[in-house]
Length: 204
Image 1: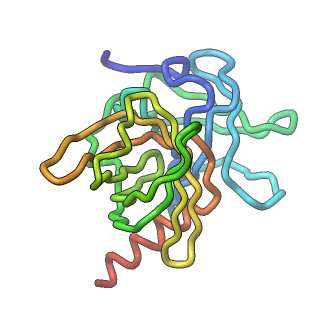
Image 2 (image 1 turned 60 degrees about the vertical axis):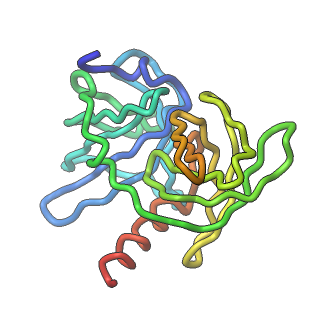
């Protein structure tokens, strides 16, 4: 598959919007709420203010992952506020990008994992990005499968993260199992948390 469109992602998929002008650049966490056609969708944006966002005169790129965890990027994306909702329009197909371009920050914090019918388990959150995260199972007791959905709670640097993730990758290492997950919900603290971790890393 050389390129994909919005229908290949599906409704509910989390996305990252990279919004920039000549002065600054920010990243916003969002989700595809309703796909209208292959290049048009209603989106929800993780933005706490009730003020309507104006995307006129800015450049927007969009990044997301498919069900199997492959990252894709769309350039020249447009977002407009219409009839009390944000409408996203893509230009052309999304192109696959190198995983290394999907910036991940190391976490290495203990957290709690919950899954329907299994109660809760202690895990280690290994790393996180705007669209995915990884956990380690040092006791080899989670027994997760591709497609399983779990919720993870952890706290770090004054931020509280509650994530819903779908397993897209399983890596069996010598002393543990690493599960790669695609984020399935809007986590209000995620953007500021990643920014804080990036600043902390540069300050070392």
